[in-house]
Length: 83
Image (cartoon, rainbow, N blue to C red; front, side, top):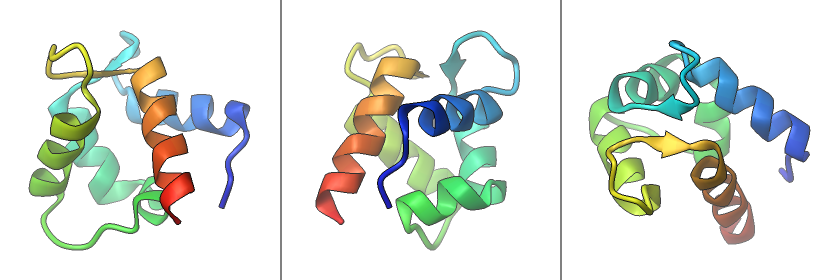
């Protein structure tokens, strides 16, 4: 599934509950656990917290323990290219 840039941005802001422009670990855990579009994209199963920690470790390029929009877009494109 190749998502349009607009869909990626919309998904980012659905997960960014406090609307600060970053997805922190809590928001990521909630997104993995509750957002069907996000779960389907990631094709994850198992513990939401462990999956969220893995995502942060892989895609948090500036090591601030949060995912910003460019990192999120890169994550989605990387996942799409692997499918």
